[in-house]
Length: 221
Length: 339
Image (cartoon, rainbow over all chains, first blue to last red):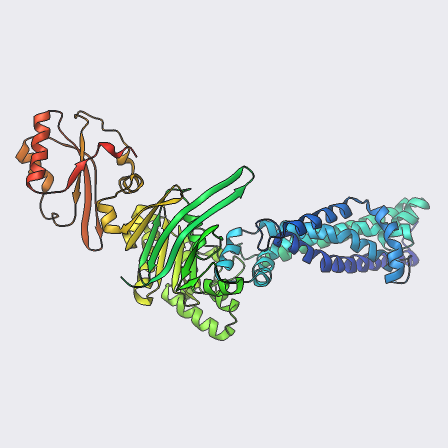
């Protein structure tokens, strides 16, 4: 097996598909997960707006979703893809299960970033008469930014590795190439090329996250 | 005395924990006058930090009320309380600056919360930075500042909304003695020039002596005593008051070669020119052992106290006592100081 033009084109398509599946799923996962993470912290006992029952229910729901293996969640959620996207096969269809799997994960990652924040800073904002919304927008989010960016690198790389399972639902991407060509047709060369490309993508995402985080952090002199 | 700006009425606070409830404050009644520097001192765990948080309702008291400028904080809605807090600046032991914002944006933060236009806020911010002597560090980030500088930024930030009161929660406890002095001087200056009432929470008597007009001593969730600093320093009524003022000396059992009988001599500022102890020793021809001595300048008067151990010989001891009586200097037996 050589890297002929057809194969290279296939790999290029694979990279693009992996990229957009990951990017869109990450985007949607954050749209859902970030507010959930905020609610988890804000409504906690001792939070800025304690609503312990809501916090508990949300916590249990998130744990439940997170404990379902992704491969199973993938098949359970595909009917939903049919409704939302109009198809249950191919790369776009996997965005729905990916988002469902990643959102609770993102919520936990975001929650832990917020919990790193010094409670004294929030207390100071309260002492100045800040409202709950003001504390969220002007303290919680900006003060946690470096940690949120690191968390995002973690979340996005996890979503990328999940997206590799798109092969099981007729979706594309590098993971599908690795499985379809490398595993089913026994072409280890192509499998390894796909895996290496995935490794490179993970490296790029992680490194970008690290750098953005460091650059944005004003605590470093 | 002026009208009280803050009145704390029968205030109590109980924390519910897994192991039952814990009483942090009980039956607190205090009045703070507009324009004064009021100190609240106590050992750690006495409840003083909880008390200061009850004043601006960062902690909601479980009993009683705080009357701020005639308004009941207990009766206020959340929004009204937030507005009241804008009239009460607060500074903290750990400064609590926003680490991701530079100095000027930290100072402007409370103005941003109240919707002051950016340009106007910035002007006000620079003005305040000038007041605290940090105008040239406006664009620095908190991580680039020393502890004292951070506290100056925090003070500027607390002043941004033109508060009537500034609450200082152990504001100098993380600073070295020199910086502490500078920060206290700054607070005093702000009090004098802007007329802002300052409430100082501390565990250090030196802080109280340096800037406070009046002080409340808090012990085991209750107020042990309240009064002018000069009075309390001279003649503490409570065991905890003696302990805080005299420190270790109040507890140390009398040792050495003497009889074990000690007396505490009080200097109330009038006798400062006269060498009392020297004269006493010369007149009585009896040596005394000085266990503890401290004189301080409190509001321009030399205040002080000294614990001396009387000679072992009963007759010598009596002569010393008689001498002190004859020159009419206040003293008391110091044996009861094991607080």
